[in-house]
Image 1 (cartoon, rainbow, N blue to C red):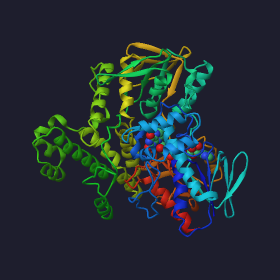
Image 2 (cartoon, helix red, strand yellow; image 1 turned 60 degrees about the vertical axis):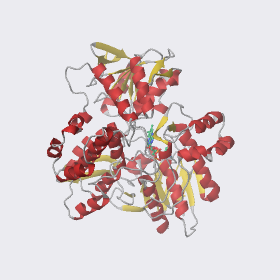
Image 3 (cartoon, rainbow, N blue to C red; image 1 turned 90 degrees about the vertical axis):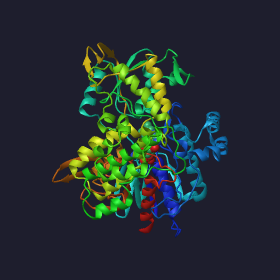
Length: 603
Ligand SMILES: Cc1cc2nc3c(=O)[nH]c(=O)nc-3n(C[C@H](O)[C@H](O)[C@H](O)COP(=O)(O)OP(=O)(O)OC[C@H]3O[C@@H](n4cnc5c(N)ncnc54)[C@H](O)[C@@H]3O)c2cc1C
C-alpha cells in the first residue's frame, strides 16, 4: 500500500511513525512524506533565528507514545525533547549538524527540563526522530522535499502533483498545518495603501518568515497583536539586533545596541498574554477536575442533559474550586479543604464564599481576568506596566504552588473534556459561536498559551527602556498623510511600518495553500459548517468525520482513503496548535494512532 502524507511537521511525522509501528501484519508499505522543508516542517525549520523559543518546556515535548496511549495502538516509547538532549542528541549533532554544530552542542548542555529550547533544537530532535525511523524501516519511508500543488482522485486512490513529478497513492493524509491566507478586506486596504505610499505592511505570518531587515533602527513600528507572535517580535527586534539583557537584583535591564526600532503595540485588550508559569509538574502530572471527570461527563451525556452552557458552568466551577483550594494552601488560611470542597460543590459559589471571609481578598472573577484594567481614570501606561509585573510575580510562584498560575495550568490540562463535549456535539451553534469561540477560546489563549516568562521579563525591561510601548485600547490605525497613524496617549505616532503580529487563522476558503485550494476545486474537501435551529456558523475548518478524521467530500460522502488532522480541521477539533506532551495520553498522538490503525485495517 502506498500512503502519501502531506506535511512533515510533528503531525506528519507522527502519522508516519504510527503507521510503521502499528503494521503488525507486516503489510508491504511505502510511505511518502511530502514537505519542501523536510522533517520538522516550516515552523520548526533549522534556518531560523535562535532568539525564537518554544513555548513548551523541554520535558513536555515528545513525538513518542507511552503507556498512557488510549487509542489501542502499539506503544513505542522514546525520549522526550529534554531526555534526548541529555542522551542521543550529542552523537547525532556531532555527526549531522553543519556549521551550527557548536551552537546545538552548547544548547543541549545548557538546556534544563523546565526550560524552553530554541525552535531550532526541536527541529534537530525531529530530524533525529525521522532518521531513526528511516534506519529502522529503510525503503518503506521516503521524504519528498516538494510542495504538493494538486491532488486528483483516481479509480483506486490519488495522484499527487508536485512541480517536478506526479505520484500515485492508495491512501492520503493531509497534515499541512499552518499556512498563509488571502487578505481580508481590511488587510487588502492596508496592503494597497502600503504599496501606494511605499510603506511596509505585514499580513499575519510566522515572525520567522517576515523580512524584518527592511525595518531600520529607531523607526516607529506598529504591531497589532499581543499574543505569541508578538513575543517572537520582542526577541527578534532586540537581542536579535545585538541588544543585551542583564539581570540586576532579580529584574532584567536592557542595554540597547542602537539598532532597535521603537515599537508601539496594541490589541483589543491592550495587554500581553499571561506568561507560562514556572513549571513544577513532572512526568505526566496533571490537575484533575472534580466535576468534569470522564465518568460524570459520560453520565450527564447519557442522561441527555448536558448543554454547552451547563458544560461551561461546570468548567468554571471546577477552575474556581481548584483556585480557591490553592489559595487556601498558598496563604495557609485556616480553612478545612475537604469541607470547603464539599460545600463549594453543593451550593452556589456566592453563597458558599460568603461564609469564608478569609477568601474575600482573593475572589476569582472571570470578568476581571478577561478585562484586567477597567478603571476609566487610570493612567494606562502605568496600569499596564503594573499588570505585567503582577503577571511575572504570579508566573514565578509556579504552576503547582501559585494559586492563579495553577488554575491557568489546570485549564491547560482540561482541554480534553472540551474536545469530548465537541465530539458529542453537545454545543448548539449559538453556544459554539458565543461561548466556545466567542468567549472561552480567546480568554483561554490569554491565560494559558502565553510565552516563557523570560519573554515577559524582557518586555518589562523594554518598556522601561522606552523601546516598547503598549497602546491603550481601542487600537485605531488610520491611514493619513502617506503613513500609518495611531494615538499613543495624546501623541500621534506616524509610522511607515505596520505588522499584524499574529499567525493566520484556519480558513479553508481563504487559504493560499495550493493543495487545499486544489482539493476544494476538485470537490474532495468541503468547509465544515454548523447549522441548527439556533443559527449557522462557518468554522473555517475542512470537514472530517469526528473520531476518525476521515475527510468528507463536497457531496457529503465520507472518504475512507483520505484523512486530515491538525490545524486545517480547527473548528471540527479544538486547539490543534499544540505539541504532544508525554504521559498525558496526548491527543495529537492518539489521533495519529487512530488514523494509522484505520489505514492498516482497510489495507
Ligand atoms: C510560530 C509558531 C510557534 C509555535 N510554538 C509552539 C510551541 O512552542 N509549543 C507547542 O506546543 N506548539 C507550538 N506551536 C503550535 C504548532 O501548531 C504545533 O507545535 C505543531 O507545529 C503543529 O504540527 P503540524 O504538523 O500539525 O503542523 P506544522 O508544524 O504547521 O507542519 C505542517 C507542514 O506541512 C507542510 N505543508 C503544508 N502544505 C504542504 C503542501 N502543499 N505540500 C507539502 N507540504 C506541505 C508545511 O511545509 C509544514 O512543514 C507553534 C505554532 C507557530 C505557528
